[in-house]
Image 1 (cartoon, rainbow, N blue to C red):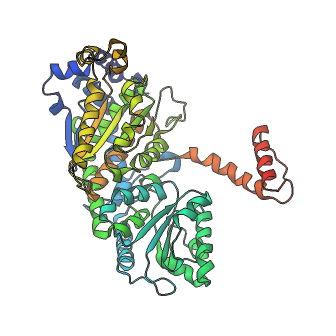
Image 2 (cartoon, rainbow, N blue to C red; image 1 turned 90 degrees about the horizontal axis):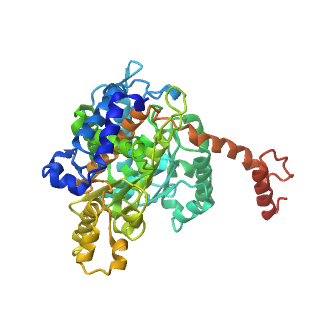
Image 3 (cartoon, rainbow, N blue to C red; image 1 turned 180 degrees about the vertical axis):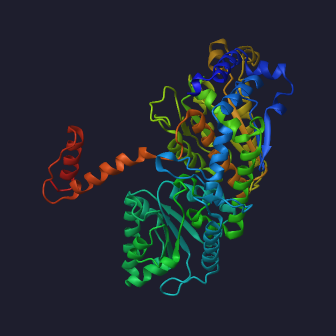
Length: 540
């Protein structure tokens, strides 16, 4: 366990000592702190100087990473070794954006020719749809594109489409259906003309229960107007590996875009799962996204830990999680286009490292993944920032901002960024009782208007939100999560925890709809709930 390492014990001792020094004192003692505790890579600038750590403690934390074999683990991942041991798979999302096109081998076979082939097929299809040459069953061009998926097949494309709207073809309307709740499908497709609508069904096995239920609903919705089953082939494409099930559904397998079992769902945006994004922004811009991913991949693989952005963020998170008792981590993008980014990171981080068993199958004796949450910009300031500033919980936060806006209206962006910089300053340095009194505040209100400060933040700043910057940003957090998984000694690339509920749901579903009263064998609570549901729906 990492907690037994001499380097960790040293880090714990130094971190404890650091907590005796306020951030005010740390900055006063070291005028060069901000410069020394910042790093730049792949178009991103990271200032981590407003953290509750000294440079000595950071050195300790890097020593922990080395002692955990991080360098070797990084090499193993990029080399295609089967580091996803519980599923006996390599982890090669980095191959999807390998813009150097260097060979990447899995079981002796270079995967890059196939990766490039799928990207070319995606590009050709995207050009047809975007140009209007791809026609629906009645000869009309496509105007609406609906992605049907769940988890990584939804969160990635939906987040990225929102983030890169300034680069999208506004003549096309995009929607993302994931929830099995019929309301999601009904509202996302409201007002759409089936003759002008294309569905992308994203499911590796083409058997995912939620996705296929929505897909069948979409087919029925289409055929209600177009009548002919032949229409399905002009209005549906698949992102899948199961050609038999795709064909059975009515989709032409020539319009099936594959991906591989060495790509986890939450890491799959650069694969065919990103097809709706390519349709939105075009193949060239999608290539720029991959460029950004690749730039951060190279930085992660090559930079020394002391200047390695994902490693720095990861080890800071471990310090707060395992030494300071922080239970959550906030991600606060000051750009409305990144509104879905915290939700995307929730899956990336919490599905990856939300584990209570280590790689040897033992219960862990320490905390692993934190709760990830956040909202964009000034909205959060008027909601939960009160807790971060003056609450009793320590909540480290990442602030993400851009020097230039896609919508430079009046003084909006200057105002937004003024808040961005002010918040990290306020969280770090607070306001003393003496400063409050000097403002003439009545003594009874002084405790209420005092801010302790020493609330840790990272600042991630870029010039402008572009496809390349988004790629770099996503890769930054992917690699951060990987580093933390290595140190915590958990497998970051499986997700067995999502399976049990699905298995039980498959058994309950027929009990809800059976004509005859089912024989229930659940616990008393679940039995009672099923009976109540049946009664309300006239199936008692």
